[in-house]
Image (cartoon, rainbow, N blue to C red; front, side, top):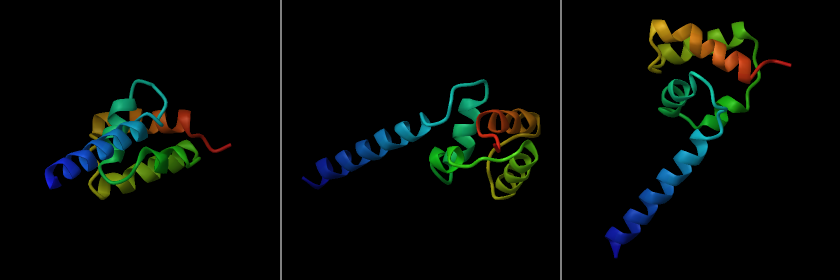
Length: 89
């Protein structure tokens, strides 16, 4: 019985994680942003914010300093994706 309960809880967690990943709009860096951000928090944390490109660059720098896996080659593309989809209005 405990194994079944644990399996159910695990499946619910996976389903919730998949649903959260779908809150980010499609685009060339969707998978990279989802992977980098979901290490520590849900995609809702990202999608609920509105920032300028400079603001997103600062945030991505802070997250990389905290361990987010964004390479130097991906940095500008990630910031562009975030600024395009979650712009300060």
